Image (cartoon, rainbow, N blue to C red; front, side):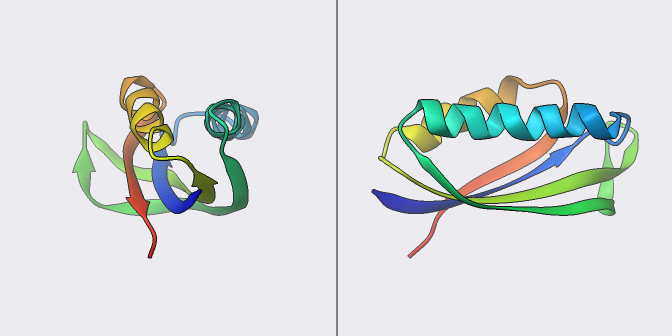
Length: 94
């Protein structure tokens, strides 16, 4: 299994409970795909570098996980179609 990292920005309009639900959903996608979540680092609400869809801030979450080669593609697909996630990035660590 290879090590990966994903950083995603959750919409700031969600309540704290809804944000926790989004984090659990992403964690569930990784675990259901055979991956292992090693670390979840919630950075909290921060100002975006530039405006995205008339939104100036978002809730940042960084996740480190181990997975096979196919899981990052599925995770990218799920994050892309999620309405509550403004932006995301999945990278392979060396």
